[in-house]
Structures are given as C-alpha cells and as structure tokens.
Length: 282
Image 1: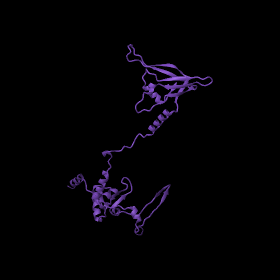
Image 2: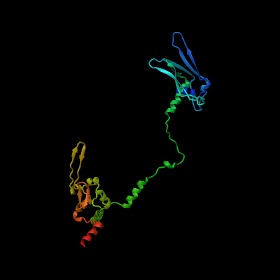
Image 3: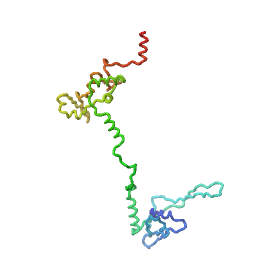
C-alpha cells in the first residue's frame, strides 16, 4: 500500500490514463536495507494550473511491515451501461490480495518543497473574511443619527409635558371618573390616568428636610444574602389622596389594587336593571 502527499494525488487525478506518472526505483546494497525512491514524470509536473506552485520531483519511500493489522485490497467492478445481457449485472466486489507492506512517500527538503510549504502556510493563515474599502456609499450600511422609536418617544414626551401636581379637587374628579368605568385599579394605571408625579426615592432620601419632617422606619431582615428594606411615611401625592377615598386590597382575587370606599361608590346601573325596577314600582 502506497501513501502519497495530497499534491501528488491531485496531479495523478488530473493525469489521463495513457501517460506515465512516475518511476519507482529500488536500490539494494548488501548488508543494508533496500531504499525505494519515486521520481515523477515530466508530464505530471506540467499538469498544473496557472496559479499553482511547482511540486518536488524526487521522493523517498519509507517501507514498513504491517504486523498488527489485517489490511486487504478490494476491487469494485461496475457493470457497463451498454451491456447486451438480458439480466443486468450488478456491482461486484473482489479481493485482490492482502497488504503486508506499507510505503509512505516523503519529499526531500529541497528548495522547491520549502517554497511549496511556505505558500501553503501563507494561504492557510489568510482569513476567510477580509476588510474591503468601499468606493461609494452603500445604503444598507449608512448610519442614522437616531432611531425611529427614540424619536417617537421624545416627541411624545414633549407633547405630554412635564408632570406637575394638580389641585386635589381636580385629581379627585379624575379618580371618580376612572372608577365609574372600572371598580379596581392598580397604582400604575392610576398614575397614568391622573398624570401625577411619582416620588424619586433617591432624591427623596438625599433631601435634608426628609429626616426632620417625615419619619422613615428602616427594618432590615437578613435571609441568607437577601436584605429587605421597608419605608413608612414616604408617600406619593397620589397615594395620600387615594387613602382618603379608596381602600387598598391585600387579599385575592383583587390583591394590590385600589377600590373606592363604600361612601363614595355611585356606580351606574345597567339599563336592564333600571327597566325592571321601573316595572316593579308600577
């Protein structure tokens, strides 16, 4: 069995079947091991593409005996397509022989081989993706100063204006109008409806008047690496109004929502209920 480098195998694949691809030379010296060499033919050396490099002509063959493996040569016979037989022949496998010696083809470290290896290393080190300089503007890569959603958000923010505290009566009117539509609201929705400012905890804690006018109770409870901080007394303006007219639900199914107190509830009755009440009075 003969093993050859890849560049020799590529040249042999290009070679037609009627030319000589090389010569095998065996030299025997009494008392020493036989030396085997391979010399490629001139016709094989000329079978190259314009961008291909020259390959070495002379190679040595290292002979080794196969002892711990069982290797064989199997031949595949493919039936011809123009066969006139009634029953078409199928592919056949035949054992040609058993491999007892292995030959490895190795080139000599000459100038041609060194140049071939240098070119192969240079090509392997080149990155697949390379930077290309553009000579014109490409629309797909043109940067934008700002994105569309950021522009829309800024325009919406300017149109709404800065949130400011409204009069208490105006906030109550907005709350009563909202609770006529729905019975339960969370704080986030009420802030959006009334457009009242929310306390910034960082600015509130940095205020010097906070500690003199508001009692802040901080209780720390360590559960492993978790610390819990509870602030009492730091209420938003909207929460102060909600505490006067609403109840905060702490149980399911309407947990963490606000509901009007019974004395402020004036829900509109459905038309069907009003009609049935009128008929009963008659």
